[in-house]
Length: 366
Image 1: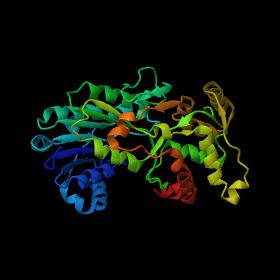
Image 2: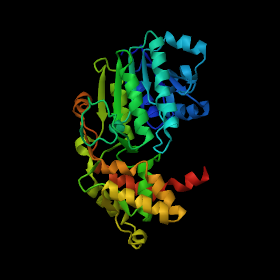
Image 3: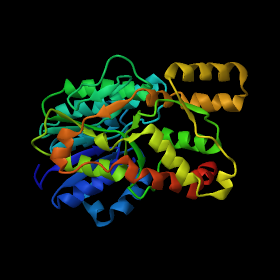
Image 4: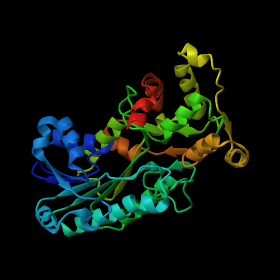
């Protein structure tokens, strides 16, 4: 794409979208952007972070769940003469969402964005930010060219993103699918600004409330920092030579074996004498059927607090028993670099969670 293009971005107020927007504008001084937002107050925060770059970004109020992305007819007509590329990053990323709720944002939202791409004649690129975990319950090596799986999924998030990818592939030429793995921190320094199922699971480990997890010592955990993902999306989304490709934005060969991940986590937390004194045992690694029996036992015999814990883990923990190895060869070649290995930031991330009290005081006050 050229310096005179205008990109339309959804998810600009989200974890990846805002940083991607800044990187796109910074990389190409002539590029202009239009950002779909539901709330102009949240755009004010994004614009403040953009600084002078905000002069080249225009917010439009809408909603991905609505036809036409909720844009009024005059706005859609105006953008039809401006937009040359779309980066669709908006998503419901809550693993425990019911399927109809996940589909409302992830599937219907993608359909609505694709319909606009088809209606806007200047648009020649549609970049979709998906997830590597569309692979669902598949195990083993997952190639970038693999189109997900129709076998089964661990949660509705995975299924809805798989279904959205299917819509993208069925659209006109010019699409690109970008699949990050789990985003667990902002940068390799370990700072966490948005919490997800990984952090909640770690909090339960820290409290000694998750005595077992499904998986084996050789199961690998693939995770990436947000800045790697947003930099990769910005670098790849508008390139003219990647149409029709699916790319993994994952640690790949830098994924971390589960036993080492637990060891790094316990070593980091053991720096606190108070926590060490609690003598909290490391969670036992068990097969998925054993873990399911544990869940059933908790449901039948435990108190409501423990039942609530196991239910909260149910939409995420089974993924650990489904080892995957994400191929990143094509993405690495295009980017000219690998994602940082998980080992490089995991310890800093878990220390940050403890040092900030897991930001629980902020969440309780909200």
